[in-house]
Image (cartoon, rainbow, N blue to C red):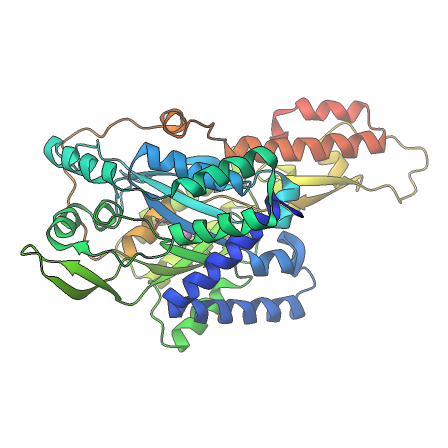
Length: 472
Ligand code: OOG
Ligand code: NI
């Protein structure tokens, strides 16, 4: 029987999940329509539209978000994603942001190889409830949560076995693939199981996210996010269709310079009908509103130095725009960016602020001249071109902002208590798999391309630029 390789499983999963989510959240279908139309318009008017990914990749591109309750559940989710060629990248701690702290730590499962990313870049932001964090949960509530979570099974054993096999064999035959996909989509579908009203409400007082994770017996996809080439146009057009978006687009401002990192915005999903079990045992109909719609525009991946520049600009924007309306903030941000951020990709490359794949230019007469031995010279004199690498990850501040703007209440957090220390290392232990560092992945990709390009140019001296700190 034909073998379906990992990437086909991933692409099929992303498509089926999208179809399923469209039946659950109708506004998502509207969002896909509007995003698709805008992408076509941009592709027609802008010859550079494919610079950060082919239009086919961008049209199929989604990220999802899921939330789990225990390290064991996280390991099982990781097994399912490993079957699809998605690995944990990055560590995000959303517990003590100044806006909208939520009791979770997160990672993103995604492909890491550039070829795999081109085939299908599906990624899932995955959050783990930090039940041991005393700012949110006292020991007694933690114990009850642990008991509740230990009794549920998010992923059927048959799915986990198939996923192990798919990971080991880098794919499955057609009938096993069909079974894996059906079970995997099923695991992320909103379950009909009644929600225990009192238990849910008790957790909701602490955090709506805690209730969404620990108040029910299954998990579900929280949102699925398409990628759009002009997010400002999308924001306006969704408003015209009567869908109320949050008050702004998170991330860098719209400006005349290069698109970097990630810009995201979202809207709250409507009430969703759920069955509740009341304290007296009766079943009643009610509604919950925990899921939302989100859309994003992706830009160039920044190096650590570039990211530090971005973080500094964001902090300065916050300082100046504190207490002002969203439109003022956007103007303030734009003015600061125009003052402090490189206005061209070339400048980003020369200053080592963003990641690029360098390609050799071999079709120019050189009159026997040798390539210079520094990256800036190689770029400025036209020996190399630099293709930007797309940012494949998330921004903790935008994530916290998006979580927050879609919650019902602020919940309660006791700031006087200490949080449990949690870092990438501890998350890797919980996962029993390494958590990869996004900066290292981009740097390796850049490095490989640059070595190849310099070898083609015969730029022996220039190979030494690889050791210069500005490169990554
Ligand atoms: C995850 C929120 C983070 C993003 O795009 O930054 C996120 C969640 O709501 O579970 O998806
Ligand atoms: Ni998201």
